Length: 324
Ligand code: PBG
Image (cartoon, rainbow, N blue to C red):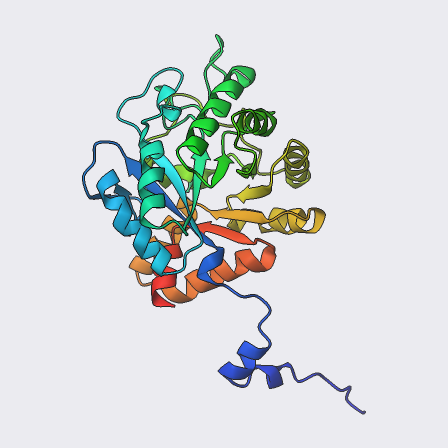
């Protein structure tokens, strides 16, 4: 009996130059955004135990960090603040001399070419750790949060932020923020909305790093149910109607299908956040000698880009760019 013919796929895998020639997905530092935790009152750097290789930075450590990241060609940073004090409303978020507002100035002075994104949320600033003010029943009061998020955004734009990135998951916040930015004269400052943000167990290490764990309950009343991909697309389209310039899917690895769906259904840049728990898993396995760190990081970041992300927000950014 005559055997059928078969394709020789290995012809295009025979050497590194051949593999490079036919490579579909490119990863460059310019696509990467590096998250930074800035702590009020801290001098220098402080290790984050649950995220080996990541530090909280004092304001005095930012200029050097910014120059290092810019020299490596990293596209931008995403800023999170640890304020000196917290209160019920989270007023540290919009203080003109707040820790992130001060950080932005330092970063832009040291490396103007680095795109500075400011995460907008109240959970790092509220005494209860939720992402907005509370109603009498203990749930987050959506509409009371909106003016606070808008005021925070204007204050961050005034401090020099290049991108405003709301991560609170309140309904209507993109519209409220866009209107407030425009009214304050910041018509040119874009919004990257954390549009499809899931209520995830993968945020654990971040909450230690940013000291932002909710004091009671969880975030399932505002962040998305991990089971819902269609609804995630609905969140994305709603944020675009409200004026978002870019949209984010978060976390990345358990939601690659959502990244792909958003890529196919929109024309805007799509960002994916490779979150703290995804980072911690890789670092822990590598530390134990169970995986090869460099290979797994390459594969992770490439996979997120292949799924359709233009921008990858990742704690691996600096180390990856440094060894490349
Ligand atoms: C603030 C915020 C969180 C993250 C980014 N912005 C934490 C949360 O929603 O609990 C998580 C990032 C990470 O895990 O790396 N709301």
